[in-house]
Image (tube, rainbow, N blue to C red; front, side):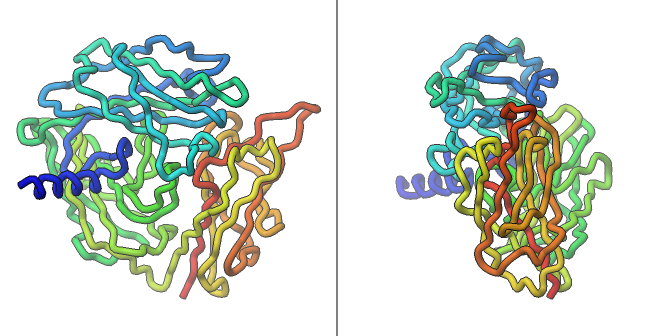
Length: 409
Protein backbone atom coordinates (compact mmCIF):
# COMPACT_ATOMS: atom_id res chain seq x y z
CA UNK A 1 0.00 0.00 0.00
CA UNK A 2 2.84 2.42 0.83
CA UNK A 3 4.50 1.80 -2.57
CA UNK A 4 1.24 2.53 -4.41
CA UNK A 5 0.75 5.71 -2.39
CA UNK A 6 4.24 6.96 -3.29
CA UNK A 7 3.68 6.06 -6.95
CA UNK A 8 0.57 8.26 -7.16
CA UNK A 9 2.31 11.14 -5.37
CA UNK A 10 5.08 11.01 -8.01
CA UNK A 11 2.55 10.95 -10.87
CA UNK A 12 0.73 13.98 -9.45
CA UNK A 13 3.98 15.90 -9.10
CA UNK A 14 4.91 15.13 -12.72
CA UNK A 15 1.50 16.30 -13.93
CA UNK A 16 1.80 19.58 -12.03
CA UNK A 17 5.30 20.39 -13.30
CA UNK A 18 8.13 21.96 -11.24
CA UNK A 19 7.31 22.94 -7.67
CA UNK A 20 5.68 26.36 -7.55
CA UNK A 21 5.28 26.35 -11.33
CA UNK A 22 1.99 24.50 -11.89
CA UNK A 23 -1.02 25.49 -13.99
CA UNK A 24 -4.66 24.43 -13.61
CA UNK A 25 -4.95 20.72 -14.32
CA UNK A 26 -7.44 19.08 -16.65
CA UNK A 27 -10.79 18.71 -14.89
CA UNK A 28 -10.13 21.53 -12.37
CA UNK A 29 -12.84 24.01 -11.33
CA UNK A 30 -11.61 27.46 -10.28
CA UNK A 31 -12.10 31.22 -10.20
CA UNK A 32 -9.49 33.89 -10.95
CA UNK A 33 -9.63 37.29 -9.24
CA UNK A 34 -7.50 39.91 -11.00
CA UNK A 35 -5.78 43.05 -9.73
CA UNK A 36 -3.92 45.48 -11.99
CA UNK A 37 -2.65 49.05 -11.69
CA UNK A 38 -3.89 50.71 -14.86
CA UNK A 39 -2.77 54.15 -13.65
CA UNK A 40 0.72 52.95 -12.69
CA UNK A 41 3.82 54.18 -14.43
CA UNK A 42 6.23 52.21 -16.65
CA UNK A 43 3.39 50.96 -18.82
CA UNK A 44 0.78 50.53 -16.07
CA UNK A 45 2.77 48.67 -13.42
CA UNK A 46 3.51 48.62 -9.71
CA UNK A 47 7.16 49.32 -8.88
CA UNK A 48 8.32 47.05 -6.07
CA UNK A 49 11.55 48.04 -4.35
CA UNK A 50 13.90 50.83 -5.20
CA UNK A 51 13.93 54.56 -4.75
CA UNK A 52 10.60 55.53 -6.30
CA UNK A 53 7.03 54.25 -6.47
CA UNK A 54 5.36 51.72 -4.19
CA UNK A 55 6.52 51.92 -0.59
CA UNK A 56 5.44 48.49 0.63
CA UNK A 57 2.11 49.33 2.26
CA UNK A 58 -1.11 47.31 1.98
CA UNK A 59 -2.95 47.35 -1.35
CA UNK A 60 -6.67 46.48 -1.23
CA UNK A 61 -8.07 43.74 -3.44
CA UNK A 62 -11.47 44.89 -4.77
CA UNK A 63 -13.06 41.45 -4.69
CA UNK A 64 -15.40 39.34 -2.66
CA UNK A 65 -13.83 35.89 -2.71
CA UNK A 66 -16.06 32.85 -3.14
CA UNK A 67 -14.64 30.41 -0.58
CA UNK A 68 -17.56 27.97 -0.53
CA UNK A 69 -16.28 24.46 -1.32
CA UNK A 70 -12.75 25.88 -1.79
CA UNK A 71 -10.01 23.26 -1.54
CA UNK A 72 -6.84 25.25 -2.35
CA UNK A 73 -5.60 28.61 -3.65
CA UNK A 74 -2.60 30.16 -5.34
CA UNK A 75 -1.37 33.57 -6.40
CA UNK A 76 -0.04 34.46 -9.87
CA UNK A 77 2.19 37.54 -10.14
CA UNK A 78 3.05 39.08 -13.53
CA UNK A 79 6.66 40.03 -12.89
CA UNK A 80 9.13 41.94 -15.06
CA UNK A 81 12.67 41.71 -13.70
CA UNK A 82 13.35 45.36 -14.67
CA UNK A 83 16.61 46.05 -12.78
CA UNK A 84 18.99 43.10 -13.17
CA UNK A 85 20.21 41.75 -9.86
CA UNK A 86 16.80 42.12 -8.17
CA UNK A 87 15.87 39.03 -6.19
CA UNK A 88 13.59 37.80 -3.41
CA UNK A 89 10.17 38.89 -4.68
CA UNK A 90 7.56 37.98 -2.06
CA UNK A 91 3.92 38.69 -1.29
CA UNK A 92 1.96 38.80 1.97
CA UNK A 93 -1.84 38.50 1.88
CA UNK A 94 -3.81 40.01 4.76
CA UNK A 95 -0.58 40.53 6.76
CA UNK A 96 0.10 36.81 6.95
CA UNK A 97 3.54 35.23 6.53
CA UNK A 98 5.51 36.26 3.46
CA UNK A 99 5.17 33.92 0.47
CA UNK A 100 8.28 33.72 -1.72
CA UNK A 101 7.54 33.81 -5.45
CA UNK A 102 9.72 31.30 -7.29
CA UNK A 103 12.07 32.04 -10.15
CA UNK A 104 11.44 30.25 -13.44
CA UNK A 105 13.43 26.98 -13.47
CA UNK A 106 13.96 27.29 -17.24
CA UNK A 107 16.10 30.44 -16.83
CA UNK A 108 19.79 29.93 -15.94
CA UNK A 109 20.77 30.42 -12.30
CA UNK A 110 20.87 33.06 -10.97
CA UNK A 111 17.76 34.12 -12.85
CA UNK A 112 18.15 37.75 -11.80
CA UNK A 113 21.18 38.02 -14.12
CA UNK A 114 18.90 37.57 -17.17
CA UNK A 115 16.14 39.96 -18.23
CA UNK A 116 12.79 38.21 -17.94
CA UNK A 117 9.03 38.70 -17.82
CA UNK A 118 7.16 35.75 -16.28
CA UNK A 119 3.98 34.76 -14.46
CA UNK A 120 5.32 33.54 -11.12
CA UNK A 121 3.00 31.26 -9.13
CA UNK A 122 2.92 30.18 -5.49
CA UNK A 123 0.37 28.36 -3.31
CA UNK A 124 -1.58 30.40 -0.75
CA UNK A 125 -3.07 28.80 2.40
CA UNK A 126 -6.84 29.17 2.34
CA UNK A 127 -6.63 30.45 5.91
CA UNK A 128 -4.90 33.58 4.55
CA UNK A 129 -8.00 34.58 2.56
CA UNK A 130 -11.19 36.32 3.72
CA UNK A 131 -14.51 36.46 1.93
CA UNK A 132 -14.09 40.25 1.74
CA UNK A 133 -11.69 43.07 2.70
CA UNK A 134 -8.52 41.40 1.42
CA UNK A 135 -5.22 43.19 0.80
CA UNK A 136 -1.65 42.37 -0.09
CA UNK A 137 1.86 43.75 0.30
CA UNK A 138 4.96 43.05 -1.77
CA UNK A 139 8.71 43.31 -1.27
CA UNK A 140 12.05 42.42 -2.82
CA UNK A 141 15.43 41.80 -1.19
CA UNK A 142 17.36 44.97 -0.31
CA UNK A 143 20.55 43.34 -1.60
CA UNK A 144 21.40 44.73 -5.04
CA UNK A 145 24.65 45.22 -6.99
CA UNK A 146 23.91 48.85 -7.87
CA UNK A 147 21.68 49.78 -4.90
CA UNK A 148 18.40 49.99 -6.81
CA UNK A 149 16.44 46.72 -6.65
CA UNK A 150 13.21 46.89 -8.66
CA UNK A 151 10.63 44.57 -10.17
CA UNK A 152 7.68 45.86 -12.19
CA UNK A 153 4.40 44.08 -11.39
CA UNK A 154 1.79 44.18 -14.16
CA UNK A 155 -0.82 42.12 -12.36
CA UNK A 156 -1.62 40.01 -9.33
CA UNK A 157 -4.38 37.46 -9.35
CA UNK A 158 -5.66 34.95 -6.84
CA UNK A 159 -6.87 31.60 -8.19
CA UNK A 160 -9.20 29.59 -5.96
CA UNK A 161 -9.96 25.92 -6.71
CA UNK A 162 -13.13 24.08 -5.70
CA UNK A 163 -14.33 20.56 -5.05
CA UNK A 164 -15.90 19.77 -8.43
CA UNK A 165 -18.25 17.09 -7.08
CA UNK A 166 -20.04 19.51 -4.73
CA UNK A 167 -19.68 22.87 -6.55
CA UNK A 168 -22.18 23.48 -9.39
CA UNK A 169 -20.02 24.55 -12.32
CA UNK A 170 -20.03 24.79 -16.10
CA UNK A 171 -19.11 21.59 -17.89
CA UNK A 172 -18.28 20.53 -21.41
CA UNK A 173 -15.84 18.78 -23.67
CA UNK A 174 -13.80 19.24 -26.82
CA UNK A 175 -15.91 18.43 -29.90
CA UNK A 176 -13.32 19.19 -32.55
CA UNK A 177 -10.77 17.98 -33.32
CA UNK A 178 -11.34 14.31 -32.45
CA UNK A 179 -8.58 12.33 -30.80
CA UNK A 180 -5.85 11.35 -33.23
CA UNK A 181 -6.78 13.94 -35.89
CA UNK A 182 -4.30 15.50 -38.31
CA UNK A 183 -4.77 19.30 -38.35
CA UNK A 184 -4.27 21.46 -41.41
CA UNK A 185 -3.36 25.15 -41.75
CA UNK A 186 -6.89 26.28 -40.79
CA UNK A 187 -7.91 23.91 -37.99
CA UNK A 188 -11.48 24.08 -36.67
CA UNK A 189 -11.67 23.86 -32.87
CA UNK A 190 -15.01 23.61 -31.08
CA UNK A 191 -16.30 22.73 -27.64
CA UNK A 192 -19.56 21.68 -26.06
CA UNK A 193 -20.20 24.08 -23.15
CA UNK A 194 -23.08 23.89 -20.65
CA UNK A 195 -23.67 26.19 -17.67
CA UNK A 196 -24.94 25.00 -14.29
CA UNK A 197 -27.79 27.46 -13.82
CA UNK A 198 -25.65 30.30 -15.19
CA UNK A 199 -24.94 31.21 -18.83
CA UNK A 200 -21.54 30.38 -20.29
CA UNK A 201 -19.63 33.62 -20.95
CA UNK A 202 -16.55 32.45 -22.88
CA UNK A 203 -14.56 29.46 -24.01
CA UNK A 204 -10.77 29.79 -24.28
CA UNK A 205 -8.89 27.19 -26.30
CA UNK A 206 -5.38 26.22 -25.18
CA UNK A 207 -2.81 23.74 -26.43
CA UNK A 208 -0.04 21.60 -24.97
CA UNK A 209 2.51 21.61 -27.78
CA UNK A 210 5.91 23.02 -28.78
CA UNK A 211 5.98 26.68 -29.79
CA UNK A 212 7.86 29.93 -29.23
CA UNK A 213 8.22 30.66 -25.53
CA UNK A 214 6.30 33.90 -24.99
CA UNK A 215 5.69 32.87 -21.37
CA UNK A 216 9.30 33.83 -20.66
CA UNK A 217 10.02 30.74 -18.56
CA UNK A 218 12.19 28.96 -21.13
CA UNK A 219 9.77 26.05 -21.59
CA UNK A 220 8.99 25.55 -25.29
CA UNK A 221 6.72 22.50 -24.75
CA UNK A 222 3.86 23.26 -22.36
CA UNK A 223 0.25 24.44 -22.18
CA UNK A 224 0.79 27.75 -23.97
CA UNK A 225 -0.85 30.84 -22.49
CA UNK A 226 -0.01 33.63 -20.08
CA UNK A 227 -1.50 36.73 -18.48
CA UNK A 228 -0.83 40.40 -19.11
CA UNK A 229 -2.53 43.01 -16.95
CA UNK A 230 -5.01 40.38 -15.84
CA UNK A 231 -5.95 39.31 -19.37
CA UNK A 232 -5.41 35.79 -20.68
CA UNK A 233 -3.23 36.02 -23.78
CA UNK A 234 -0.99 33.99 -26.13
CA UNK A 235 -3.52 31.16 -26.16
CA UNK A 236 -5.07 29.71 -29.33
CA UNK A 237 -8.30 31.71 -29.32
CA UNK A 238 -11.54 32.68 -27.55
CA UNK A 239 -15.20 32.18 -28.43
CA UNK A 240 -17.72 34.45 -26.67
CA UNK A 241 -20.95 33.04 -28.11
CA UNK A 242 -22.25 29.70 -29.31
CA UNK A 243 -21.33 27.78 -31.31
CA UNK A 244 -18.16 27.74 -29.22
CA UNK A 245 -15.73 27.59 -32.12
CA UNK A 246 -12.48 29.15 -33.35
CA UNK A 247 -10.22 28.62 -36.35
CA UNK A 248 -6.58 27.99 -35.46
CA UNK A 249 -4.13 29.29 -38.05
CA UNK A 250 -1.24 26.85 -37.73
CA UNK A 251 0.87 28.34 -40.53
CA UNK A 252 3.55 29.51 -38.04
CA UNK A 253 3.20 26.69 -35.50
CA UNK A 254 6.43 24.65 -35.43
CA UNK A 255 6.51 21.05 -36.62
CA UNK A 256 5.70 18.93 -33.58
CA UNK A 257 8.25 16.39 -32.32
CA UNK A 258 5.42 14.32 -30.76
CA UNK A 259 1.59 14.20 -30.77
CA UNK A 260 0.02 17.11 -28.88
CA UNK A 261 -3.17 17.99 -26.96
CA UNK A 262 -5.85 20.69 -27.03
CA UNK A 263 -8.34 21.66 -24.31
CA UNK A 264 -10.88 24.37 -23.46
CA UNK A 265 -11.42 26.61 -20.45
CA UNK A 266 -15.19 27.09 -20.06
CA UNK A 267 -16.23 30.08 -17.91
CA UNK A 268 -19.73 31.16 -16.85
CA UNK A 269 -20.84 34.75 -16.29
CA UNK A 270 -19.58 34.70 -12.69
CA UNK A 271 -16.07 33.66 -13.76
CA UNK A 272 -16.37 30.09 -12.49
CA UNK A 273 -14.17 28.08 -14.87
CA UNK A 274 -13.88 24.42 -15.84
CA UNK A 275 -10.88 23.00 -17.71
CA UNK A 276 -12.01 20.21 -20.05
CA UNK A 277 -10.42 16.89 -20.74
CA UNK A 278 -8.18 17.17 -23.81
CA UNK A 279 -8.35 16.08 -27.41
CA UNK A 280 -5.20 13.94 -27.61
CA UNK A 281 -2.85 12.33 -30.09
CA UNK A 282 -3.04 15.28 -32.50
CA UNK A 283 -0.61 15.93 -35.35
CA UNK A 284 -0.06 18.56 -38.08
CA UNK A 285 -0.52 17.85 -41.79
CA UNK A 286 -0.19 21.05 -43.83
CA UNK A 287 0.15 20.06 -47.50
CA UNK A 288 3.92 20.30 -47.75
CA UNK A 289 4.33 23.24 -45.36
CA UNK A 290 6.94 22.72 -42.64
CA UNK A 291 7.93 25.13 -39.85
CA UNK A 292 11.24 25.01 -37.98
CA UNK A 293 11.67 26.60 -34.55
CA UNK A 294 15.27 27.79 -34.04
CA UNK A 295 15.90 28.23 -30.32
CA UNK A 296 18.44 30.80 -29.16
CA UNK A 297 21.56 29.83 -27.23
CA UNK A 298 24.54 31.68 -25.78
CA UNK A 299 21.99 34.29 -24.69
CA UNK A 300 23.72 37.19 -22.92
CA UNK A 301 23.18 38.26 -19.35
CA UNK A 302 21.76 41.74 -18.69
CA UNK A 303 20.55 42.15 -22.26
CA UNK A 304 19.88 45.89 -22.28
CA UNK A 305 20.95 47.70 -25.46
CA UNK A 306 22.15 50.85 -23.71
CA UNK A 307 25.09 48.88 -22.31
CA UNK A 308 26.53 47.76 -25.66
CA UNK A 309 26.04 45.41 -28.57
CA UNK A 310 24.74 41.99 -27.49
CA UNK A 311 24.84 38.73 -29.44
CA UNK A 312 23.14 35.35 -29.29
CA UNK A 313 23.19 32.32 -31.59
CA UNK A 314 20.75 29.83 -33.11
CA UNK A 315 21.06 26.85 -35.44
CA UNK A 316 19.20 26.20 -38.68
CA UNK A 317 18.68 22.50 -39.43
CA UNK A 318 16.38 22.71 -42.48
CA UNK A 319 17.24 22.97 -46.16
CA UNK A 320 17.31 26.73 -46.77
CA UNK A 321 16.81 26.16 -50.50
CA UNK A 322 13.22 25.30 -49.58
CA UNK A 323 12.72 28.25 -47.17
CA UNK A 324 9.92 30.64 -48.21
CA UNK A 325 9.55 32.93 -45.18
CA UNK A 326 10.86 33.53 -41.66
CA UNK A 327 9.92 35.45 -38.51
CA UNK A 328 11.95 36.78 -35.58
CA UNK A 329 9.94 36.51 -32.36
CA UNK A 330 10.77 37.90 -28.92
CA UNK A 331 9.44 39.78 -25.90
CA UNK A 332 11.00 43.08 -24.90
CA UNK A 333 10.63 46.08 -22.66
CA UNK A 334 11.06 49.63 -24.01
CA UNK A 335 11.88 48.60 -27.60
CA UNK A 336 11.35 52.19 -28.73
CA UNK A 337 15.03 52.61 -27.78
CA UNK A 338 16.33 49.72 -29.92
CA UNK A 339 18.77 50.47 -32.73
CA UNK A 340 18.79 47.60 -35.17
CA UNK A 341 18.94 43.84 -35.44
CA UNK A 342 21.93 42.33 -37.28
CA UNK A 343 21.87 38.79 -38.65
CA UNK A 344 25.27 37.37 -39.55
CA UNK A 345 26.55 40.93 -39.87
CA UNK A 346 23.65 42.18 -42.04
CA UNK A 347 21.23 44.77 -40.67
CA UNK A 348 17.79 43.17 -41.06
CA UNK A 349 15.56 45.44 -38.92
CA UNK A 350 15.62 48.93 -37.44
CA UNK A 351 13.06 49.61 -34.70
CA UNK A 352 9.47 49.21 -33.52
CA UNK A 353 7.42 49.48 -30.35
CA UNK A 354 6.93 51.83 -27.39
CA UNK A 355 9.28 53.21 -24.77
CA UNK A 356 8.95 52.15 -21.13
CA UNK A 357 6.40 49.42 -21.85
CA UNK A 358 6.23 45.71 -22.73
CA UNK A 359 6.01 44.52 -26.31
CA UNK A 360 5.83 41.24 -28.26
CA UNK A 361 7.62 41.23 -31.64
CA UNK A 362 6.91 39.10 -34.71
CA UNK A 363 9.18 40.57 -37.35
CA UNK A 364 9.15 39.14 -40.89
CA UNK A 365 12.68 38.44 -42.09
CA UNK A 366 12.57 40.10 -45.50
CA UNK A 367 15.55 38.22 -46.90
CA UNK A 368 15.73 34.53 -45.94
CA UNK A 369 19.07 34.42 -47.80
CA UNK A 370 20.57 36.19 -44.77
CA UNK A 371 20.26 32.84 -42.97
CA UNK A 372 22.98 30.19 -43.00
CA UNK A 373 22.73 26.46 -42.60
CA UNK A 374 23.99 25.58 -39.14
CA UNK A 375 25.08 28.28 -36.70
CA UNK A 376 23.85 31.88 -37.06
CA UNK A 377 24.69 34.98 -35.02
CA UNK A 378 22.08 37.62 -34.16
CA UNK A 379 23.10 40.96 -32.68
CA UNK A 380 21.25 43.96 -31.24
CA UNK A 381 22.83 47.36 -31.84
CA UNK A 382 23.99 49.78 -29.16
CA UNK A 383 21.38 52.41 -28.31
CA UNK A 384 23.10 55.76 -28.92
CA UNK A 385 23.05 58.66 -26.51
CA UNK A 386 20.40 61.31 -27.10
CA UNK A 387 21.36 64.97 -26.57
CA UNK A 388 24.53 63.67 -24.96
CA UNK A 389 22.61 61.63 -22.39
CA UNK A 390 22.44 57.86 -21.96
CA UNK A 391 18.86 56.62 -22.47
CA UNK A 392 17.21 53.42 -21.31
CA UNK A 393 17.68 51.04 -24.25
CA UNK A 394 15.65 47.93 -25.10
CA UNK A 395 15.55 44.96 -22.72
CA UNK A 396 15.41 41.59 -24.49
CA UNK A 397 13.65 39.11 -22.21
CA UNK A 398 14.37 35.42 -21.80
CA UNK A 399 14.66 33.15 -23.75
CA UNK A 400 16.03 35.67 -26.26
CA UNK A 401 15.15 36.15 -29.94
CA UNK A 402 13.59 33.06 -31.50
CA UNK A 403 13.38 32.29 -35.22
CA UNK A 404 10.61 30.53 -37.14
CA UNK A 405 11.27 29.37 -40.72
CA UNK A 406 8.61 28.20 -43.18
CA UNK A 407 9.65 25.61 -45.76
CA UNK A 408 7.69 24.46 -48.78
CA UNK A 409 8.48 20.86 -49.61
